Each structure stands twice: as C-alpha cells, then as structure tokens.
Image (spheres, rainbow, N blue to C red):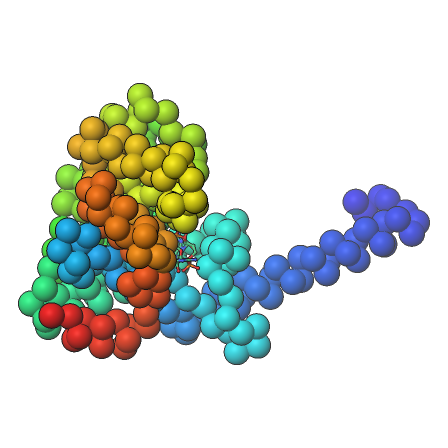
Length: 277
Ligand code: C2E
Ligand code: CA
Ligand code: CA
Ligand code: CA
C-alpha cells in the first residue's frame, strides 16, 4: 500500500496497526504463558452412570494472566488456532494430562482415563502420530488411560487421511470420542464407519431434557442410535437430577457436569479422588 497517498491511507494504516499490535501482544503473552508454565489444566470428573463411580476426567485448559485476568478457553483457543500456537500448547496439554493421570493412577491404584481436547489444526499436522507416540513414550502412561476428544465440527473437512490417523491413534490403545455431538453435520453413513469409540452429547441437548416430550425423546434417540453403532455415550453438562435420572433410564454410560463437580484444579481433583468410596 506504499503507493497510496492521502488521508485514507493513514487512517486505514493506523487502525490496522492498532489491531495488529493488540494481536501481537496477546500472541506474545500466550507464548510466554506456555513457556513460563502459566497455563494450567483443570480436571472435571466423569462418572459411570450405572455405578455412580468416578471413572475419569476431562482436561480443560486454563490461562490466568496477571494483567488480563482469567481468559476463558473459548476466547484464547480460537486465537491459538489462528496463530499456530495451538501446536505447542496442544502438545503441552497432552503431556501434562498424561503425567497427571499416571501419577494419580499409580498413587491410588486406580484406572482413571483422562480425556484431552484436540483441535482440528492438531489433527491435520503430518507428524501428529509421532507427537502422540513421543508423549506416550516420555510419560510412560498406559495408552488405555488416554482419550482424545475431537469436535463433530472438525469432521466437516473429514477425509481419508483423517480417518487413517484416527485408526492409527486407536490402534495405539487410545480411545477416541466425538465431542459436541449433535451440533455438527455428521451424516449417519460416515459415522457408522468412523474409527471412534464414544459419542459425547452436547450440553445443548442435555439441558433440554424435561422441557418437552420431543426434546427429551431426542436425547434418548441419540443414545439408542449410538448404541446401535456400538458406540458408548457420554452426556456433557449434566446439571440436574432429572437429567441424570433420564440418562440413566436410557442406558447412557457416562456423565459429566456441575451436578457432580465443576472442573477442579489438580489439588482439588486430588482431594476429590480422596473422598471417593
Ligand atoms: P468442551 O470440550 O465442550 O468442554 C466442556 C465445557 O463445558 C467446559 O468449558 C466445561 O467447563 C463446561 N461445563 C462442564 N460441565 C458443565 C455444566 O454442567 N454446565 C455448564 N454450563 N458448563 C459445563 P471450558 O472449560 O470453558 O472449555 C470451553 C471449551 O474450550 C471446551 O469445550 C473445548 O472446546 C475448549 N478447550 C478447553 N481446553 C482445551 C484444550 O486443552 N485444547 C483444545 N483444543 N480445546 C480446549
Ligand atoms: Ca471436550
Ligand atoms: Ca460442548
Ligand atoms: Ca468441545
């Protein structure tokens, strides 16, 4: 835009710079947060509906900045995806989660499984399999204690390559779960052929349980559909007794939500495990 003259140029340029400046600050901050170990994982318990027992947890990323305060993942993850920072961050998340689950399982003699959220950007990386293998190796975690959650939305650009990667990850012994199920555009024909183990029903459906017969039956239908495809089902965002009772009556395998526990810092999760019968 050098050849452009007059006020327009300067006005346009100044606002562009301000915008870029803001992003660069945030990018630097997020990069520093990763480097200085200022990112943290919190863990939300997952409950076996049939037994009421703790069977695992979802790792949820937390970022607290001294100036900006607490920044929710819904805001900084999309930014990390745009800038590519999700790649080192995602690797850190997997590493941290594997170390933590191994530590707790060894200490308490448990078989908890940790679920880690993967961004579609990570899955698209050519060396993603190698990255996962390296983390499994360096943390020495049993792969059956690790689950990967990928959003149904990331299936939008679903292709043979992705299918192949999922199959390899699964062969390693890692469980694969389709997150936010019901919010994307999955067609039944390819769902049936996906190398996945679990569907995770989005909270948007769970919160409608009891509001009308149609809404309630829809959740039941999703559970039956999953079972017909030999998939197990996790309900996300369970907040009320009524939701829990209905899910149980439908044979839904697992639930997660404020009804049981909010996401907990590692210290509080440790306390939570201690209180389990
Ligand atoms: P998600 O994977 O769908 O995670 C569930 C979100 O629902 C979490 O929000 C959790 O705290 C919240 N939640 C759990 N139970 C309840 C409930 O009973 N009621 C309500 N209202 N909310 C509940 P959070 O921790 O803010 O995370 C938001 C999103 O950020 C996640 O949605 C996930 O897409 C993304 N995210 C978080 N950590 C990571 C990560 O390590 N990597 C990637 N790629 N994405 C992440
Ligand atoms: Ca998730
Ligand atoms: Ca969700
Ligand atoms: Ca999600």
